[in-house]
Each structure stands twice: as structure tokens, then as C-alpha cells.
Image 1 (cartoon, rainbow, N blue to C red):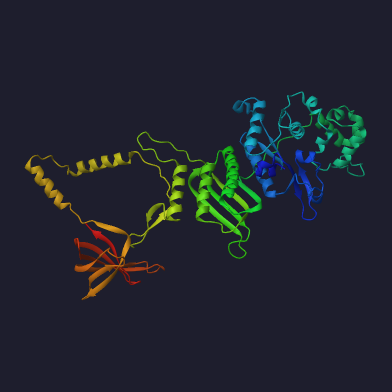
Image 2 (tube, helix red, strand yellow):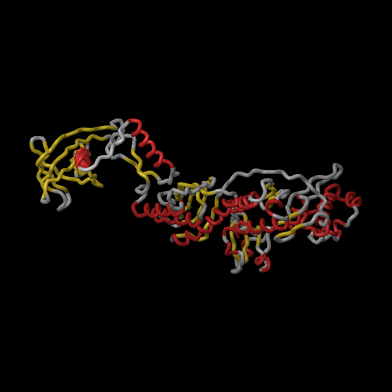
Length: 538
């Protein structure tokens, strides 16, 4: 039941019944207290309660139960490294020595209860000197219970005898002379015939007489009722799985209700990550579509790679919204599955002499918004390709790198050291000698700059004697004129072993335009036969 209520918190105030089985043989597995007051009990069929309008029916989901169990494990391991995965709804912790970290045991119990509540689980927390006593108290008492050592029998005495058989496990054979094994239901019926209703009634029975009638199994139940039974903790180390899934009652078409559902799932996952002191590195979203996008394919998947480990549910939700706006599912959504790949948070410390970099969350949102406008793969960090193709680069995801404070200073010191070692330190000059030396150095340092056109301008070229004589761009009033001077061609090629091989001829031309003579670089793509202007010279 808690798995259903954790996935749909709005149902906690309503009468809910969980169904198990296949139609038409579905039966009620669990009910809330409101449904019990309405007359719905476990074991009833779906037809018996289907006519009631106030009863909300939900199918049992094994995945939701597994996710709730993982959340319970995360809550337990955030307090103690020694835990035992006792059952699907029960976790045992070793709290020995934790009072130095978290305070007294009652405070620890309350913090465990509130931590589980933040994860969407309403639990019963019991603290006792023995495992069996804490187990029975958690099954019998609600919310937080602390049993002082020596008062276990007094506190457990008010519990009903049914708590001893709440696990539903059949009793094993306790005596070799017994002809048959008593099951839990039969032993409970025996206690009822004897008038045993509470733990204190069972604790008051004489041990010899109880052993003669029920054997060692009866004595073991009596020791549990008195709080004297104990066993050792069996530690477990479950794998880290951060997944949430939700089956929708009605298909979702709009992004707004889907974002509301994703927000709740992300809050639960982030709470689990925080309890483990972890962050998210990747977000995997899988949605089952009603009709499918192509034929029988009805699974829509998206993956968001984060540049650095983050832990912010609002940032994750905004990234998913921007991604879904750019890549719509194309059909109504009937099921949502969300998975997060965990990673250790990245420690960061700013320097005193370095400018502050933007926060990773805000930077990732900004890049996502830019990608939504310009298109996927068009925003990021350019990286030169390992090829001789001119201006060949690819866009990679921008990842802020660590800044080195001493790089600039070390470079300046190294340059000064090289000048001193080479003996090229310039001597100061004054008057006319200084002006003449500056003029000569200025003239010798003049270079011609090529301003690259982004993107290259496609042109039509007329030839005369094997050289370009006239060019005109395909767009009106852009570039058009006679070629008064041309140098070239300079041919270059490469990647002939790849599918995207290239061969190009380069020309330097002077075009007479209305504003005067302008120098351009003209490129001829030999494989496609197209001509385009790559840039202009200053």
C-alpha cells in the first residue's frame, strides 16, 4: 500500500484498495483505513467493491514496491552502515555507537521517521535492545516507539497476539514425535480457544505446560512476547538502484501534466541521492506510448548527460522540459520510467585571484535553452578535427575546466627569462631614434588578415583563359563584379580513404565593385563543382 501512496500522495486521504491477480479473478490485497471503514476488506473480489464510487482501485505494481523498498534501504543506510534487508517492508539497523553522531536513541528514531517521510514513506520506527523486540514493536505500534531495556515485557504486553504471526511464515516442525506441523493459522486459533488475546496473556502461561502442548515453537513465541528472544544481525549490501516508474491511469498528451509527474519522481530520486551523499551524472527517461511512433515500436527514450554531477530536482525538470519540447514523443504517454546514474559530487573551491565561474546548474540550463533555439549539436565547445581539411571542427559538450591561477604569471616569467637568456632585451631609446625605430617595427609587422565568411557565399564564376573573369553571388545586391586580378589555383585534398573525401582549388582574386577593389579568397569544390567565397582580405 505504501508503494502506491508514495507514487500518488494525493490518495492518502482517500479510500484506496490494491488489486492483485488477473481479470476476472482479481482480489483485494491491501486497503487503507478509510477503505476499511467503508466495508472493504482484504480478500474481497473486485466485483464486490467495483460498485462503490468512493473506493479508488489500483493495480499492484512490483516495480513501485521495489522502488519503495530501495528508498527504505537508502533511508536506513543514511544512518547506519550495518543494516539487514529483512523483508520487503522491513529493514533492521544496528544503532550501536550512533548516539555520538546523532544524539540519544529517541532522537535517532524520530530523525529516521522524518527522513523516511521526506522520501514519501510513512513508517513505524521501533528501537529496542534486541532485534526481535524491535521487530514486534514496529509491527504493533505506529510511528516512533522506544523500548527501554528491562521494560520490554511491560510495553509489548498490550499488543494483540496476531502480531506474532504478522509475517505469515508457516511454523516449522518443533518436535520429531509430532505427526504433523502446526501452521501459524492453526496455532493462532489454538491461542484464541485458550482465551489468549494479548502478549501479556501468553507471557503469563507456565513454560512447562506450554511446552507440553505446543513444543519448542510455543516457548519461542512466549520468549518473543516477553522481549527475551534475540538473534544476530545479518548485514546486507544491496546494489545502488535509483529508478522510479509510474503507470498512468489515463494517457497524457500535454507536456504540463507530464512535467508535474516528472517533478514528483525527480523529488523522490533526489531525496534518495541526498541520503546516500551522491549526485546525478545521467538522467534516463523512458516513456511507453499508446500507439507507438512507428509500427510496433512504442518506447520513447531520452538521455541527458550532465557535464558535472548535480543534485537539483528543479534543474533536472527544466532540462527534461526543454528536451521534450525539442523532441516530442509523438503519441500519448501511458507509462513513465525514470532512472538516474549516480556519481560522487564534484568538490569545488574558488581561488582568491580567479573570477567566479557560473554555477553548473545555471550554466547547463542556459546551454539547454540555446540548444533549443539553434538546434541540437549547434551549441558547445568547438574542437579541431585531426585532418588537413580547412576549418574542420566539431561541436562538443561544454564542460567548464579547472582554471590554473599560475598559468599567466608563469608564462610572463618564462618569457622574461628567455629574453634575458637570449640577450634580446630591448634597450630604451629616446627622441627621434625612438620614433624611427617604432615606425620601422610597425611597417615590418603589418600582415594581411583574412576575414572568414560564416557561412561561405555561393557564387557563379565566368572564366577567361582558364582564370576567373567575373563573379556574381546568388543573392541580389551582395557581391558582383569583374575580376581584375587572380592568383592560383592552389589545390589541396585529403581523406580520400573516407566517404567524406575533399578536393578544393583556392584562388586569390581582386574584384572591382562600386566601393572599390576588394580582395577575396575564391574556392572551387572539385567534387561538387560549386564555387564560393570563403573570406575577404583586409
